[in-house]
Length: 203
Image (cartoon, rainbow, N blue to C red; front, side, top):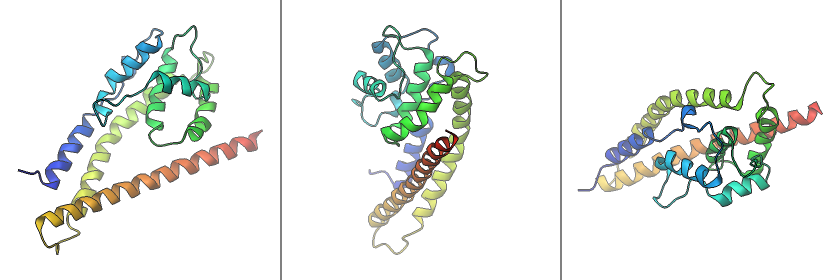
């Protein structure tokens, strides 16, 4: 029997709540070669894949990030713990932002915090703070998604059939989430533009 919209959405939400996060403690404290880096990312972010044969990060991707100055080059072909923190951020950013936008926010980050032992705040401190905040926000996000889903279910009481109502409700729900993602993407892009503009004024 075909699952209802509610069963389907609840299943997706459960899977999202099981999404792997890379705990700060999981990131190796030793330097890694490229193959070890890609294997580590594939193993720890496996639940983020849309399709089983999707790759989290490939050698080509990592090399391109280095060429585009998003990622500092490895030392003697080895990637440090700081490299790993940046790669996790890159993984999430690349699904939302352009390479150009990522470069704008990564350049000052790497200049200030990459291998800078003299600072009071390290890349690991930044990663830990953001990781903690994101885990807390997952519950709030789940509640918001459920609220939007319930609202979409009530939009088409006059549909000709249950099948038509299910389709229209699902379409409306997709529109709600897409518009939300669009607005947040616009907000991030404008914040990046303002950050770049502000840094230009300081020079």
